[in-house]
Length: 524
Image 1: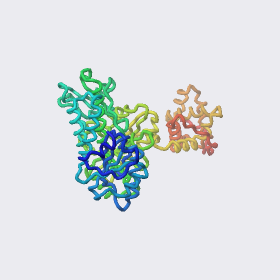
Image 2 (image 1 turned 90 degrees about the vertical axis):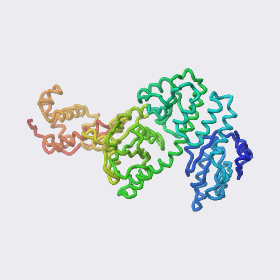
Image 3 (image 1 turned 180 degrees about the vertical axis):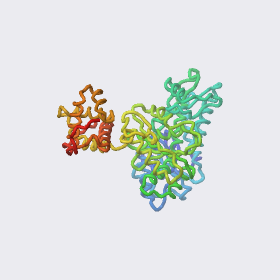
Image 4 (image 1 turned 120 degrees about the vertical axis):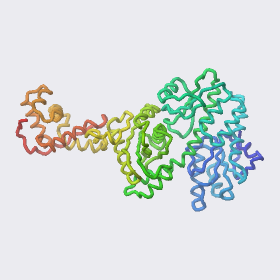
């Protein structure tokens, strides 16, 4: 179906406002209905874009029109169909922006339902390509109407396989969560679902989604179904998933706004409470905060991973968004009984993109909105610890797991750990000095043996006098007194900082440390 076919349909009564010479002959691949100010993420090439112009206001009309149409041009939309009901007519600034960017634009009369346009496009599209499809015509019509109404995956899957005799079908996410299943289909665990995906489930292609949210179509008796039919059903499910993503954009924006409030110093508790209500969360806790990072630039992957983790936890309300600096976060009410913990499903979700480490941090439960900023700080520090402890491995670190000095230090930035280690250990890190390595090994062993000369000598296969001599040299180079608990703690912390650095980070030696307060040998 081409743009000109849609414009020539008298039953729709579309009014062409502008189109270049060749643009009306552009083929339409589908339809997107949106009222987002920036719809680029949700528009596929060749789609007709329907908008009610709710996003447009006279006060900033030119700027908003420019941003909206530029997004359509970037996404390579085929035509803009603008509803006239909201403002009485299509604003001139919008038409002018379409002319500048070369996007055909037509007005949709107030009495014409958007669903009528959607049905026209998809029914024509299915009809033109009927010889390439395996689904019966009546099934294609039913699916088209379901898509136009914004139906979810359960009714679409049921309609797609209803003509098959007692078909058992599922839609799984990449982490094995069941999104939809035919009536009477037995429940399947996440592990079993992932095995079925690995065995050859049909991937569902959808735009603007992270790899952690991919759907997969599985039929129990797959050999009895033509491959073209499976691909056709998967394509319909892809459009269903795209539609759900578009409808969820407003919820994510509300979550982003809440994240901005929580990240601000001295946040407004009243505004946070309003933000919680906007996100559909209860006014009182307990809540937990989860943060995640994949190292990817731009929005999408980490938020998708967190959304999938939250979906595994249960059907209750949650807010999943993006903090101002780019970290994905989620606020989840803490139920009285927790059937599934985030740590249980983290490896399943991370397996959706095995080549990318998925790091996360989890706060402890907090009672109310006023404590959410603190919970966010906990979760972010736990995230930093997860990255520092296992930079190349997916890991979720709860704040409650920060019970040792090593895990606590791992959350400190790499540059700070390196600087502290360099300033405290000094010449012991100088690889050009042949005595530096034995002294460093002796220091680690001496501290691990709780300052016992005899146990240190036994562990290193040295005479105890040699240990005394080396400890004196360590005190000389570092300026620390190893009979002092405070100095021992400083040195042990410096060693832990050094040991938790990524392999790619090297510490240049610092100038020699201050002189020891005492170099006299002390018997232990």
